[in-house]
Structure formats: C-alpha cells, structure tokens
Length: 136
Image: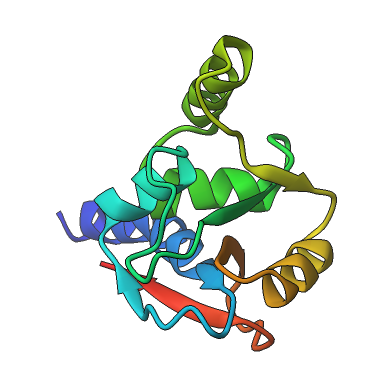
C-alpha cells in the first residue's frame, strides 16, 4: 500500500508543478488581481470582450504547438488546446467574433502585454515584468 501511495505522489506531482509553472499575466494598469477559472476560460475563448472598467480585452497567445500554450490551456484553463482552437476557428470562419493575437515567443508576448492597455496572456512563473493574475 505504501508503494502505491508513493507511486501516485510521483505521478501527480508533475501535473501539480506544471499548473504552477504558468501564470496568467496582464498589463500592469489593469487592476485585476484574480479571476475565476470560468472567467479566465471565457476571456481566452474570446467570449468576454470588455473588462469591468470598460477597457477592451486584448488576448495574446503562443502558437498551438508551444509547450507553454499546452500547459496553460490544460492546467490553468482546464481545456485542451485543440478545443480552444476549434472555438477560435469558428469565430474566424463565421465572421462572428475575434481571435486572439498569436505571438512568436514568450518574450514577444510579455513585450506586447506590457505595452497594450487591457492586454492579457500567460508566461512562465517568475517573470516579473508584467502583472500576475491569480486563477482561483
């Protein structure tokens, strides 16, 4: 029984650490310190377009193949990356909504977020150049 407990601990630890390795980040002037997982999912799936203060939301993401994008989607939003892509493609091809802005690197995302009012995205934990939003 003890071996099974240790085995479960070893298997589940990377999942827990991966979810903590990616942070939701925003423009420093946004003024929001936390979001529910549901609200974050609505923002990143482009269903919510306006912040409570009236500013438009500008979403930045990495390419679908990026490991950071996959970790963020699965562990912070609780949705598979291909499902996010399916939602975005539906908006794009039907002309009924907008899609997030895709950037080439984490550095480019941080630069874009820090210079765009109302911007939100994600980055590896420990990046202190932008405001971190807690997902609860």
